[in-house]
Amino acid sequence: MFCDQCEQTAKGVGCTITGVCGKNPEVSHLQDQLVYLLRRLSVLVNQAEKKGIDVVGYDDFIAEALFATLTNVNFDPAAIRKFALDAFNSCRTLAAQTGETPEDLQQTFDEYLAGLTEKVVGLGAFSPDADVDSAMQTLLFGLKGLCAYKTHAARMDQRDADLSRFVRKALIAGTEWDQETRDLGGWLGIVLECGTGSIKAMELLDKGNTERFGNPVPSPVSLGHKKGKAIMISGHDLPDLEALLKQTEGKGINIYTHGEMLPAHGYPKLKEHKHLVANFGSAWQNQQREFPKFPGPILFTTNCLQNPRDYGEHVFTTGNVGWPGCKYCHSQDFSEVIAKAQEMEGFDDDYEGEEILTGFGRKTLADAAPAILEAVANGALRHIFVVGGCDGAFPSRKYYTEFVEKAPHDTVILTLGCAKYRFYDKKLGKLGDFPRYMDCGQCNDAYTAIKTAQALAGALKCDVNDLPLSLVLGWYEQKAVCVLLALLSLGIKNIIIGPTLPAFVSPAILKVLVDKFNLKLITTPDEDLKTCLAQK
Ligand code: SF4
Image 1: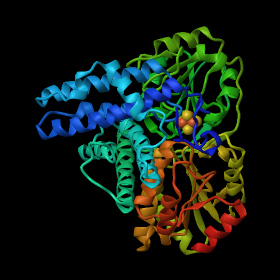
Image 2 (image 1 turned 180 degrees about the vertical axis):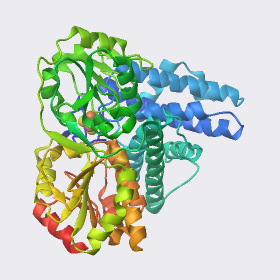
Image 3 (image 1 turned 30 degrees about the vertical axis):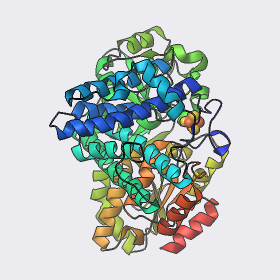
C-alpha cells in the first residue's frame, strides 16, 4: 500500500505497511482500485451526458464513493468492494446504453480488479513527473473533501450540474483518458478550479442546512450531562441528527453531540428538540480514551472514526462510514441504536459542566457586520483571526491553543471545524458586544468566514487581503485541503497553515504556493501573531 493523503502519514512520507489511522493494505488497495474505477466511470458519464442520458444518480454515486475513501471514514473492505462493484456495473450499464462495450469492460469484476492491481495500487505515484504527481494528488485529495460536502448537500437535494461536470473532469485529469496536456501552470489552474468547486459545494451545503434547519443563532452548549439514557452522535450529517432526534422523541433518551456535530446546537429546528442536551468529549483523536466513559451507544455519520477496540459493540455507523464488525444503520433507521441505548445504563446523575457558545453562522455575522466595521473604525477591534480547520494528535498542535490564548484582547477569534477543540473552553471574554470567541460551525462553514470577509471587504471597498484579518489553519485530512484550495482560489494570501506541510506537496508546487499566495507554515504563536498584526 501507499497512502500519504493525511497529516499523520507515516514518517511524514507515506503509510506503506499499514495506515497510522488503522487502514489496512486490503482497504487501501480497494480504495485505490475504487478511485481508478471512478475515473473510468467519469469518462462514461461524460459520454452518456452528451447523448442526453440522465446522469444525476451517477454523479451522486461518484461523489459518495470518493467520500468513502477519505481519511477515517470507511475501514470496511466489504463496503469499499461494494462501492467498486457498483462503479464497475455502472460503467457497463452506461457503456451498453451508449452503444458500445469497450474491451476493458468485457471482463468480470474480479478480472478487472486483478488487472488494475499492477496499474494503480501501491505505486505511490500517479505520474513519473514528481510535480505532476504532486498536483494530481493535491487535486484528488481536494476533490475528496469537495465530494464529502457535495454528498451531504445532495442528501438535502442541493446539486449543481456544473460542479458534477467539474468532479468528472478532475477525476479524468492526467489519466489515459484525458484529452488535455498541462504544464505546471495548467495543473495549478485545475487545482485552483477545485477550490472554486469547493466553494460551490460549501454553498450548496450551507443552503441545504439553513433552508432545512434555519440560520444558526448564538447558542450555549452544555459540556455536562443529564441523568438518564443517552446516545452520542458524531460527524457532519445534520439530517441524520434530525432523524435520530425525531426517532427518540418522548423515549426518555438524551442526545449528545460529539466532534463536528457540536455546531448542530445552533440550528433553530434542531435545538427545539429538548432532548438534544449537550456535547460530549473533545476532538476526534481522543475518542479511544473518551468513548468508553460514555454510557450509551455512539452513532458515526461521517469521519473521524478510529478503531473502536473493546467498545465496538456500542458503535454504530451510517452514511459512508464503516468499520468491520460495527453495526451499520441503513436509510436512517436508528431503531437498533435506540434499543442499545435502552439496554445500556445511561448517566446516573446530573452534571452541569461548563458551557460554551456556538451558532455564529453566516446570517448572524452578516447582521453584525455594521457593528464590526464600527469597532474596526473606532479602533476597538484591532484584528480578526480565523483559527480553524482540523484537530489532530500531534503535540505540536498546542500551537493553536497558545495562539488563541496569546491573541491580544482587542482581537476576536472566528473558528470553524474541529480545530476549535484546542481552545473552545477558554474564557476569552468579550470585546464590546462581541464574544471574543465565535464558532461559525463545521469545517464546511469556512463558507461563513469567506462570506463574512467578503462582506467586510465590500463595505470597506477594499480587497479581502487588505482587511485586518488573518487565517491560521490546521489541516489533518482532505476536507482541509478542499478548504485551503477554496481560499487560494479566491486569491487570499498570507494564510498560515500547520502543523506540518502535506507530504504530497512537491518543492516546485510549494514554491508556486509561496510565491503566488505567500502561504506560510506555522512558526511560534508569538512570531506569527507579530507578523499578522504587523501586516495590516
Ligand atoms: S489516511 Fe493517513 S494515516 Fe491513513 S493510511 Fe492514509 S496517510 Fe496513512
